[in-house]
Every structure is written in structure tokens, then in C-alpha cells.
Length: 116
Image 1 (cartoon, helix red, strand yellow):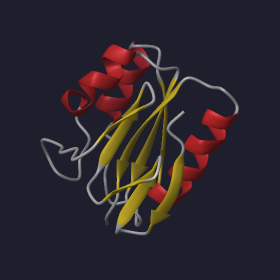
Image 2 (image 1 turned 45 degrees about the vertical axis):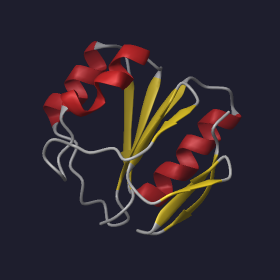
Image 3 (image 1 turned 180 degrees about the vertical axis):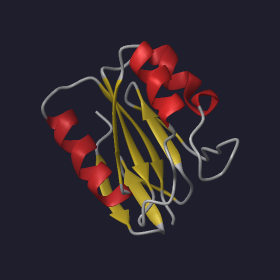
Image 4 (image 1 turned 135 degrees about the vertical axis):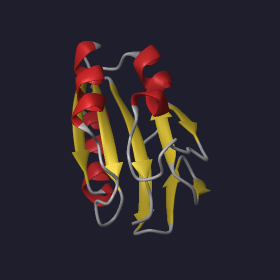
């Protein structure tokens, strides 16, 4: 089910008993660790091609503990064009949203920036 068990602000995220210290995505119940973006703190549609291929109903984006990662309108438009709803929040709130949606059985993917 890939529920997020813990997020230590800016330090790590624990998913299914495994601690991850780098940004990650959760797609189709699988963790993709060591997620890097082409432009660091700006989410480009090329950074989430695997999400677009999986085509979940919703993508929850954790923008960092202070919300410093930007989700440009063009990226939101690409997601919308694929029928994917976008929720972008600071990572602590995004973790809660992601887990709640998973608990409710929704088809949700997550992309989480752990720091800043």
C-alpha cells in the first residue's frame, strides 16, 4: 500500500519500514528513491514522466518543509491535460494528504522534496 510512516522535517521519510534520506516518488505503490529534478527547486513535466505514464487520479507534491520547490503553471497544465489532479503542499501537509487519500482507496501518486 506504500503508506508514509514518518517524515522528519528536512531529514528523512520512512516508507514501509525503510528510511529514505533523498527526495522520492511513490507511484503505483512503489518507492522511487533518489529523485532528482532537472532544475532543482522547480518541477518540470520531464521530472514526472513516470507519473504521467502511470496516470493516477491525483499527484500529491511535497514542495519541501518550507515549500521552496515551485510547481509552475505549465507543469500543472501538463498534469491536467493527462487528467491528473495536482495537490502541491509543504511536505509535512503533503504526507498527511497522501496518506489520507491512500487510506480512502484513492488512486494517488506522490512526489516529495524532503528538504527546504
